[in-house]
Length: 249
Image (cartoon, rainbow, N blue to C red; front, side, top):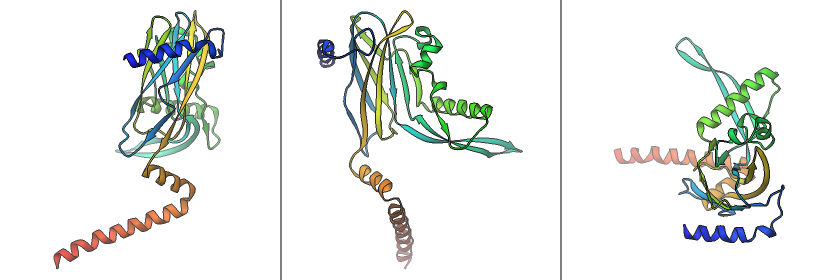
């Protein structure tokens, strides 16, 4: 803990050199600029440290890279459930974690929350095919419910620790199935129901080792990768089929 307190002190000392986004100075810095995913990766606890001037409430928003998702609706026919409709959605963040010193709804009015992207239901998402307004709204709500249930969209009002109304630190638990790309860490300082300070940091999630080679091959040479993968699967099946025959002889 003493190591992180020293880091917090250094961050606070550097505050005058950092331009403020709003009326009051604020700075945030993720623990690292890169998170490497290897075969043993099962998640990571990432610390975010920062400094502010004077007391106030804080909101930290972690946003992952955009992704594509397919949402299906099932209908019960007799004793069976069958898939009745499928919609593909694009553009929504793969992950949104909201950390705060108090419930966000108690800090900001809905209009302010929407302005700063703090309402899950207002996160922009596009549909690959045209839908009527009421149908699109139903699908959008279903998408957000699924993301919350899976743990990719969630809010935690107890994760930020504040030291002396000036320094703060938050522990963010990253899941094991992170998407590759850039992640944004945005910090908001709230006083009297208004955002008075803002700063943004970021880090990148990348693959290392064999995962990086497989991912790059699959994206750069999809047809070649698919053909080789199919050939290897056929070869493995042939070998597994031949071995028992030899043992029987």
